[in-house]
Amino acid sequence: MRRLISIAVMLVLSTSSSASTAPPLTLRTMTQQPADLKHSVIGPDGSVGHPGGDCNDTDSNIHPGQADIVGNGIDDNCNGLADEAANGDPSTDGSDADGDGNTIAAGDCNDLVASVHAGALEIIGDLIDNNCNGLADEDENGNPSNDTVDHDGDGVAMAPDRIFLDGFEG
Image (cartoon, rainbow, N blue to C red; front, side):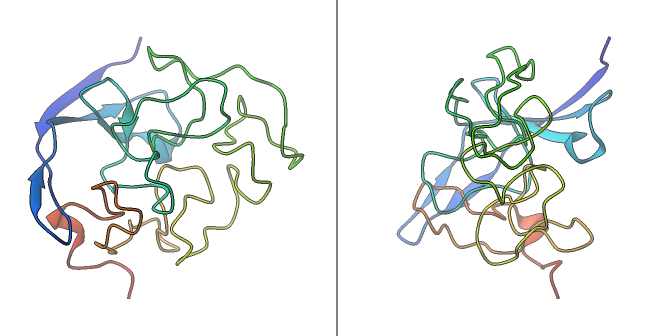
C-alpha cells in the first residue's frame, strides 16, 4: 500500500495581462513510483502533475490540473502518464500507435509522436516533455525549466512557482 504525505500548496500564476490565483493543489510524495514521479502535485480534480508546471506549453489543453482524457494517447495533466484512469491507475494499453517501440503501459506519455517517450532525450526549448517525466525543458540534471512565460495562454507556465524563478538552467 502506498503511503502518501500531503501538503497543501497554493500557486499564484500570472499572465501577461493580470495575475490570477490557481485552485489549491496538494503536494504529495508517492512511494512505489518511478523516481521522477515521486514528487507530484494533485489538482483539485484529483489529477497528478509536477510542481514544475506546464509539460506542454504549446497546447493550452495540456497542463497540471487538466483532467486526463482516457484513450487520446497523451499526458493531459502533466504527471508523466498518458490515459490513466480517473483514480490514477496507470493505463494498461499495450498498443504502440506511433511505432516508437514504447507503449502507454510502458511509460509513453504521447503515443502520437515517436520522438516522445520514456527515456527520450529532453530537448530544451521545444516547450514539451520529451522524456515523459512530467516536466518540459528540464536541464540535464533534471532541474525544472525556469521559463515563466505562458506560451500557450492556458494560465500555466513551465515554471509557475517562485521557487523556480531564480533559474536552474544556466
